[in-house]
Amino acid sequence: MTNRFLPVAVAVLAIRISVAEAALAQVTPASGAEAPQGVEYRIEARLDETTDVLSGRAELRYTNNSVSPLDTLWLHQHLNAFRPESAWARRELEFGIRRYQDLGPDDHAFDRLQVVTADGAVLTPVYPLAPDSTVVGFPLPRTLPAGGTVTVRFDWQARLSTIPRRQGREGRHYDFAQWYPRIAVYDGNGWHTQELLPQGEFFGEFASYDVTLEVADDQVIGATGVPVDGDPGWARRARPGFDTIINTREFYGEPAEAPGLGLLTSRTPDGTKRVRWIARNVHHFAWTTSPDYIYEGGSVENTGGSGGNNPGNSPGNSRGGNIGDRNPIAIHVLYQPADSASWGGGVVTERTENALRWLQEIFGPYLWPQLTNVHRIEPGGTEFPMMVMNGSPSEGLIIHEGAHQYIHGMLANNEFDAGWLDEGFVSFLENWYWEEHPGQDAAMLWAQSMAGIRGLELAGVSEPIAQPGAAFRDPNVYSALTYTKTALIFRMLRWVIGEEAMREAMHTLYARSALQHFDEHDLREVFNGVSGQELGWFFDQWFHTTAQLDYRITSATTTPDSNGGWTTRVEVQRAGEAWMPVIVRVGEVEERLESRDRIQVVMIRTASRPDLAVLDPEGILIDLIPANNTLRVSGP
Image (cartoon, rainbow, N blue to C red; front, side, top):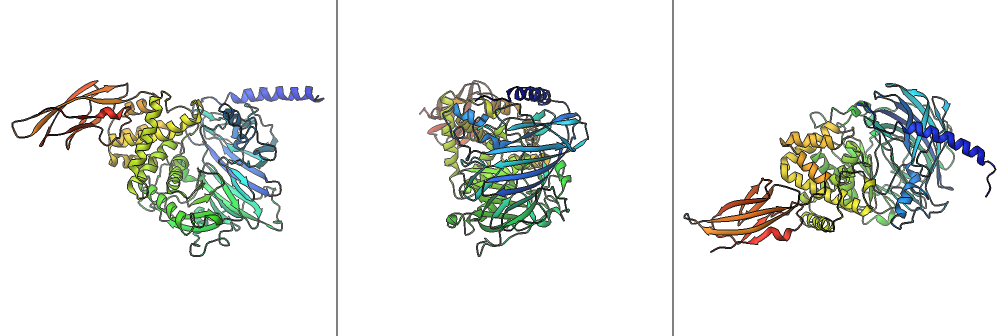
């Protein structure tokens, strides 16, 4: 088709590319930015179920607390990943997956900006990664100096995809995540902007949210934050006997009467309702709605309060809400009528309560007023601040996604660059939970994980774990190393420093870094300090190399001694480049070998003649060939 506007279009494109190139100069490591940026969102949004389109208007107040001036604000429009020609769709094509590349115009997701202004001046958004549109720049009309504030307003329309992935729609059920243009993180390393890909998840700036949603009046809503005005529909759909609704409306104090943004008129249309939500100290606002949801409520005592292990050094504490001293923490569960036996009757409510109770023991007080657990459209689970969207009532899934409330939610590392710090850490916590609770055989879970990773290592497809998600060769390798191997590594770390020190490290890490953005440096610093050991060798070896470990017993000979006992000489050989302390067990006696020598000899005395010498008897180490860790003792 001939386009008679082509010359004009080319000229406009050239202007936009030049603006994008200038703006992208800021998406490089920069100096400064010691303090977190100040971010406040006010959003009005209306869901039209006849078109499945959400229309929104937002006011983003952004304060530059860094030492560097900014010419452009960078945001993510993650919904645009779930459509043809996105970086996500093109990445999946490399593996023969066409689910989003072939999605039709009525089914794919979108996030479309309409009008954007900054302090009243109209802006032209730029998309430097086009045709991917998950990263957008707002070139500012004037430079934002250090300490300066700019108010950006934008209208947009959003639609979820019919093939769900961390969001989605089905009939009148909508799982809204990444549904609005979301400010990227700016820190001492510059802007963190990356197109959304199947490998890796999210990184967001802590912010306050004031969100008013207009939906059909029979809809039931669950969301990040607390409802401060309007009816989310819980009481009407509460299951008898499980209908306790803990009102956390006062957690943030009396909400101010904010002037409207003009999208939602003063009169609520017939057949609709409006619900206003407040959330602070969170890096995302997610929500779900379905008229069929059934509500069940519960609560967990907050372990904070006076004298509690309240993270007091976090700059986020000054952003509102009496953190850690409000009791109780509300639990909200939303599920479909067909789930009554599997989710209902207090099943998921109790599992969510148990998870949050244990996580407070491990880290410290939960800093938010509530946790909502909903049955989403998609299988599996995804975490958001104050909210988990789960595809099943599995207790393991609930503890996994619940643990994300601490690691992803409040410690909030960059999952694009270091997925292992979140997913692997949480996978370790999930198995740790099963070590202390009935329901799953933790030893079997660890053994299955170990077998899978040994297979990957022996196949020669391992990669360094501490690399950006996009750098892994494929999603399967990414998942195996980021989730499973990392969990095994954290288990080894707990063994190296001891469980008491591990628990102390969890509390210390949380107390120092909650409501900030922690990274590997913070993790190392805490574990070194708490353990009194220099653990750089451990982190370097296991996260930054593909070094493999293979201990073996080459000989084990015993002889009787003059005191009626037996002395066994065991020779241990280390193959591969990795090293770890290792336990040698002879009979019932254990010795811990700490030398890095390739060959070590240990003499072990036992009261009776031993039959076997065994290395790593508990199977803690990622040892490539465990079959050579056991040898029958020879001798008289």
